[in-house]
Length: 124
Image 1 (spheres, one colour):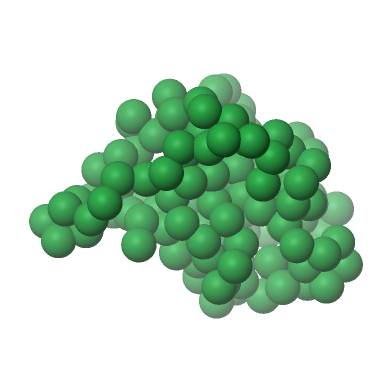
Image 2 (cartoon, rainbow, N blue to C red):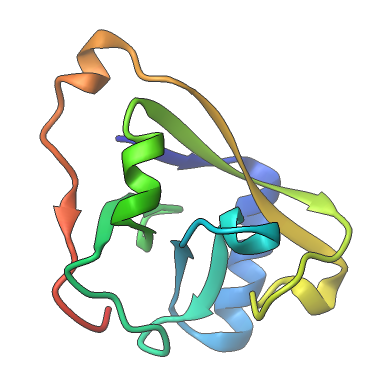
């Protein structure tokens, strides 16, 4: 598994799912908060061939990343965390005065040998 979530971030995520139904994460890269994971209602963000599914967090929440961003992060294990403060953008947690962020570490040899991530094919 190349992506995980902290207990604090999972608690925020569960509250979002209770309010909005199934959700997903997408990390696109870019400047400012473009490199932060954004949380959207599932089905409202279109993923395609330029996106990579890194895995699911909290059991069933997919975490997608743009292929360009994945090239930079491909050797790391990502952990979704949450901190106080507002991020930019349209991520669902923003009105709560918190924002999701990524913590990372290098993959172990065993993790690096795991099958490659899946490329997206449409709306998830």
